[in-house]
Length: 406
Image (cartoon, rainbow, N blue to C red; front, side, top):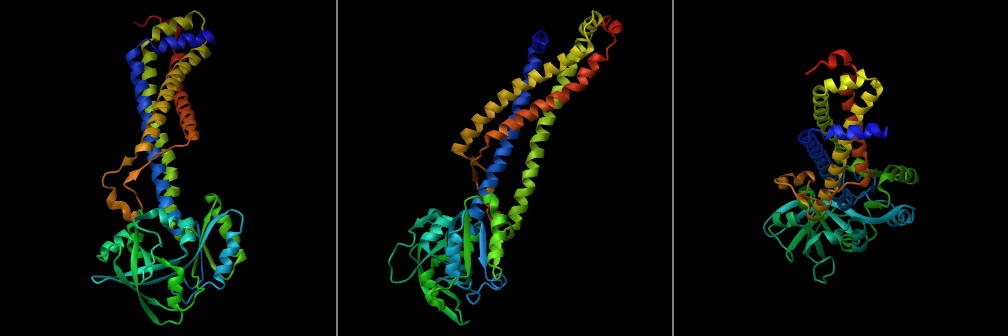
């Protein structure tokens, strides 16, 4: 076997140019596959973080009627106590008990529909990292005569307002009467979703609850988990614990995102596989050309008694060696490339127009180490499969005819 490996090694370098070309193709194919996978994974992670962890959270609980009619009338009974109980459950990272309902926001120039979220600043910062999303102003720390709001940058632009501007919020109280109150914009936040940033406005829960007429009102409980993968099980347990409430996890709250992530994960596997398969056909062609150029040599080896199994193994070994060399270099360069791009980011031209769908204009690709091992195994497997036909052609040679080939 050692002698056979030495012969195979020498054979692949007989035509250095051809061997280097196929190794280069293999390296570029792997780099292209890893880059595509890393970009897709980065987009997936960014979408999930922006949509789930910064906006809707892993799980939400509401009054059953609140889903169709987001009004203060449909409050969660003993909502604060329910939130405290959930916060003490194992695996729960953060809980925010909110007063959420629809209303209108008006400035001196414009009026638009908004979703008002009354929050506890500390709990909300832990649940959605709202404080870290601020691009201007402060986070509920100003002591103005008017209560403060945190508005989306796009919403403020639509209202022709800015930090420090006065706006009027109009909404329904717990008894059904309409309530209007003045607020001052203390800070502006930004998220990837333009629709969310244009519609959602945050106020202190204590301020808004006083205005709607119920200091203890809670219409929404948002839950962030330590282990994201267990969201379905936790949601099921919470639904069993609180059967009179409506418990929904992020896949229910944003089914479009869930479907996209599931489908794109499968497409990613196929994408990388097809790229490597295409390179493998190039490898097959190279080895087949090598066999056709060495017909007389192989005929002589068979004529002097070399077993066909050894000839078959030699061809497979040549292909495997090329794939290992190209695979190692390709994975090494891919690792370096991804590390560099993860630091500097990849700017996606024209992505600004896709922000309504939750896509960022800058992605920071990364790939788990296990993914590189999977790609390496895939390369070797496809290389071995690509070597079968040339090896079969080699052992099908008739020695007497092969030795007369010129």
